Image 1 (cartoon, rainbow, N blue to C red):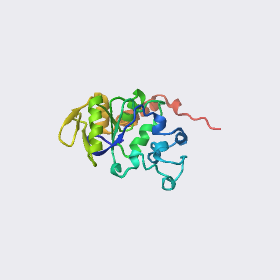
Image 2 (image 1 turned 90 degrees about the horizontal axis):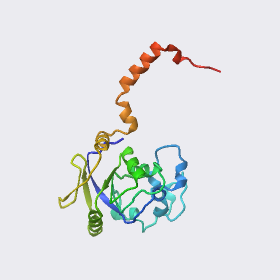
Image 3 (image 1 turned 60 degrees about the vertical axis):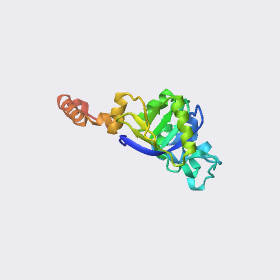
Image 4 (image 1 turned 135 degrees about the vertical axis):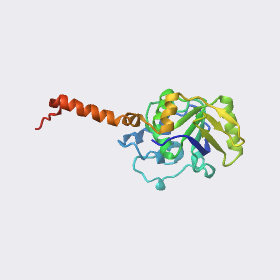
Length: 216
């Protein structure tokens, strides 16, 4: 998982409340057994005018010119600004995977659905909760200033606006530790790889019958 320390990026506004995980990653794309390749189908039913299915070449699709991520001024955005209750609905992990694989590094909203919020951290995404007033002001500023960027400073836990104004945010210490070091659940376990190998070696030496295999 990529480390998250200091990130400066273009902001894209998702001006809808209660955006659910089926809108973020529609159900037909959950058939894949891989954890990669979901970025092109992020917000698929809003992003394209034709119906999408797994395996389609995005170059053959019909993009919706009115959808925010298809507008030229938001190309390359890596910070998503959203309204309340972002990520509600089913608990599919594919939703944060798709956001990450599209290129987003941070999400800012007044509130997130609990399971989605937790899954974001496991995918290397930083979900940031700010007040309704702060988020509304950010929406106004993004609309007013093309190329609007924000800097997210995770060590200091602040969002820095172009004028230097700092917006503090909360993050649990353990989640912050994992993001700063790029540890997902597997990465956390692998920190103890030497101890795990030593334990397995000692176990096999003291209980060799556990290493038997039934063939046939």
